[in-house]
Image 1 (cartoon, helix red, strand yellow):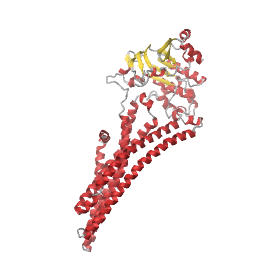
Image 2 (cartoon, helix red, strand yellow):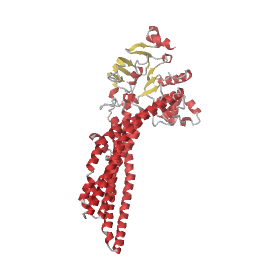
Image 3 (tube, one colour):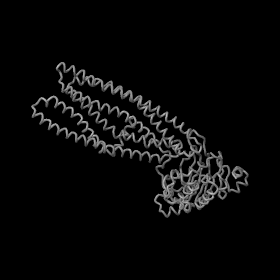
Image 4 (cartoon, one colour):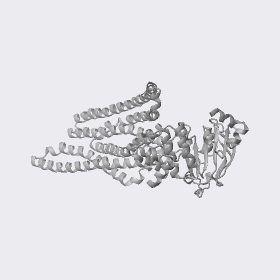
Length: 576
């Protein structure tokens, strides 16, 4: 907890001038609250016993003094509410940028096990609660501590016996608060987990809403959501049970302080050891004293929310990217596209079997290589090692004789273009999605890329042409249209190395023909890897590799492999 608190406090550093000003005005506001009961004591204990003229004159002076105090308090509260909140928003901005940037660095291995909805919860809900704590927490503590300590000093000076009666209850109150605080912290952490689970479930449902509706499974989804929602409600009930006990207990202790003051004060007045104006002042200060206690109660819930959110924030930030540039990494330039796999082995984690085992492969620059085999044989995994989406667990992958781990990730991936079966298009326009392949490209370059991908014609058929909004994940486009946009994106990028991961397997025959033509145009004079499901699409490949669980079982041209009568020949006739 100590390290987390240090890290949390470090986010104030860029805004220390605003933070200190915020604390200054919080101190002024607390001081105003402490001064007013003293003014009341002066009026009721001294001023009212003076001559009428003196009373009127004194009230004018007091009125002006109180007006100044109110103006000071007004500006102090405005500064806290305005600039203090802006400081909190800036901290939230920085933290959100930090975690988003960190998430961009995490490898596929992290996202293989992560749920998008839970990650979204870390970036939104958790960060909001963290910054609410970072903004309101210090000022609430300053206000509360100053009021409590100030009231204590003043009350002791008014009457030590009565002050003792008032503060006799405090140790019991703080012990009670400490015990409940630990239980609330655990309960609020469970709340965070349940909220993240619900977010993940909602994201999963909405992303797959067409599948839900096609199976008429709305009721199934409602029941699944009800289970998650019930778990959230149960966790909330548990945390609010502790919260209710906490608030009720503190409320009773606060009332007990007032009861003690009234009883002991009455006894002191009866014995002539105290006057009524002091008792009135005392009761006013008990009010001043009670308010910060309630603020601290609210702060406890705020702290639990904020600190729990910060713990979850740090859980992500403390994950070290397992794929990053080596300290001596250099830029990969002048790429020809000669790719070599030297004794490459790979497993996804230590507890799983090897997907690739001692694979050796040499692909000349500009070669067109196809990968076929049963699902799970490692075709996609083999290709994913080239751009370092995963790192080899044995051996090495070379591009033009350079180990991919010795060059910067950005320069490496800028030399590789990928077209996948599951096309991902971003919400926005057709133009924006093609231009994603080369930020800063001219409009002429974008249109030329679309023409090369056989996409220009269908794009122009839309009323808005290239400015057509394609919806979330390109939902307004057909499968073939989406695939051609993804190819146009790679045309615009113009990389020397290409990877086609079953890019046409989900298309109808007509769309496949158009897309296949685009792919072949794109592959010309580039080192190309094609992961194929339909073997008819790779008959012209210069080299076809047949992958099995034991590695590369066969290799050769289409006709050579057919003549062998081995695995490829069986696969070919099976899929005809």
